[in-house]
Length: 445
Image 1 (cartoon, one colour):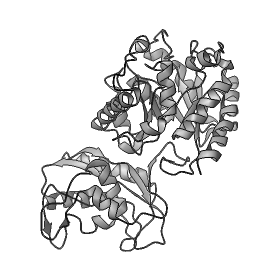
Image 2: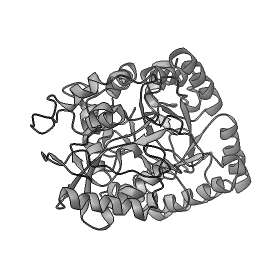
Image 3: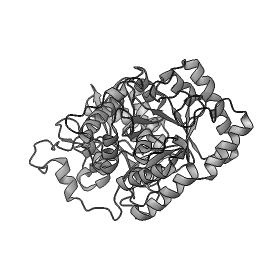
Image 4: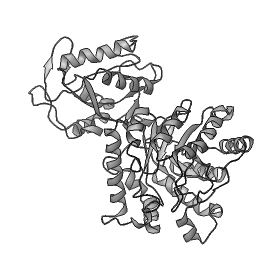
């Protein structure tokens, strides 16, 4: 009931508020049809792994105190409620009394419990007890009847905008438009720099009218050799754009993304009303970024990159192949983000086309994106792909002027959609919006 994701995130904060519980990792959030009492809205379910010195009964008291503090409303048994906190497993404890049964009595019959658990501990077995069935949790999941429609994890973007559901085959590809308020970006540098408010507002309206549902605002170029400005100057470029977007009626349901690798810029931008932090370095270029992301609780995009924009083009060796290298290194960033408090359901991934990649590696990533998406440990995340007007497209097509690389970009966008991308980041919104719609019609069926 209510804002379901917000309720779960508030419960996580309340669980940790007393200092008795530390959340180590979370699963994705899975939206599912209700069981037992079916005449109710979809439920959102997830699991978290915690560290605590509390006994099982003390932990139960703590969780029920959180439910009470949050004003839990239970209309009917197994019916809708704003929050429901259950203990599924507690180490190897087996117990049963009038208040608590461990392991949870119904967990093995519930797909919506087993799927999030299998994201965290797929090989875990129930405690050895003659009353409990043998087998790893992943085996129990395989024996549960599959839902009519496959369950999908969800990723929230912004209030008023539907969640991304990466496992729904019929989902629409989201269009993220690039709004660089910089004088030196590789493709559109200066186009939106120091524009008067009316001109910038017209640009924003045109992107939205053309189909953009996410606006990615950047105040620092990440092209090779770009001059790195101060955080203050980056904010002086970004914040007026964010404030303008927030004031435009046409942008009421638009998600605002901030393209930055600086923690302080990200924090001030989110406070000003942005919704997403899009970090090309996945927290590598600023040691405070991941902790800041975790504290802010917003949705984040972690992109694969090596080194810095100045050094990345020299760091293109992937001895085990680019799919393995990118997959393994992104998984490391995901784990670092989770350790810093970023919830799994708030993470979007980006393979980093053009960043520490050769032309052949860029092509291989696009060609085999469906394999990268299934890399062990990265399943279920939504993916953002940015190929728009990039240098490798120019080299292949022979088009030197970046803004003229529309046709090459269109082919790359189609490949990204076919490979499973959920978001495409583009300069030419109207044209690439049409490409995405056609690609969706071909492959999202």
